[in-house]
Image (cartoon, rainbow, N blue to C red; front, side, top):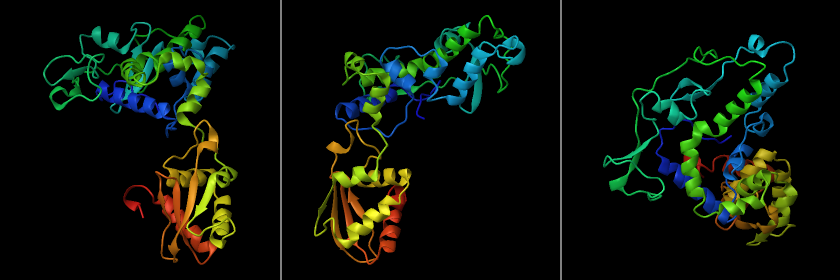
Length: 337
């Protein structure tokens, strides 16, 4: 799952730039290789997330635990669960715990201690960066960097008990669950998300998002990974001497039919640079398989800009499977064939 990091040391303009790239991808109908929880899409649409079922897709274990806290009916949860009214998160290899009744946000937490949040942006000129007026990609002379706070106070260890926060009881457990989820999806990442949203709404109007449900919005941005061999067959065309009846093409489809869903997604990424289909499905996609010489010593290659697989003619299906799998599995980094 993809999510924001509380107390990130990255400068806000970087989140703004990522938001801009997301909006450009959505504007051009390009699915992104991310897996964001529905809470992210609710948040961009201006809705609050405060119930366990709203975070079940992103934090299933946490959602189950919070729901158990709400459903418990055999005595007082204070004696059984022994939970304090706080929110914990990990940053820089340490666990921090904040009393969420006492502090409204991370900024309040630092302000009441006379400290600067570690993610407060400052310019190398000594001036505070104004996110609303700063360029999306600042120049070198106005490069923002995260202010490293050397006096961050670690309020707790990894233990769940926090002496300064009250205990969660039957009386306050409903409010606690709502506050905890709100801190998880809003307060703890407020600065990072604000910068991201500033970049995202550069190309996409907030009003346009009201046309979709959160699930539809997710499919629009992330596409779908439910790719079948039938989908691939339907959008595939042949060139360079290949036809559907060619022996190499027959061996190719027999090989792909034996692929797992993960291998099919990897093959699609190898040919098109994306492991998923857009929200419109495969109807707007095009794959071409072109003959690229003969010889068992050659590897398949691709031209992702055109969705073209350059497939040599092999002497047997076994050789084809070996070479195709080798090309797909080593198509990134230094293993590129």
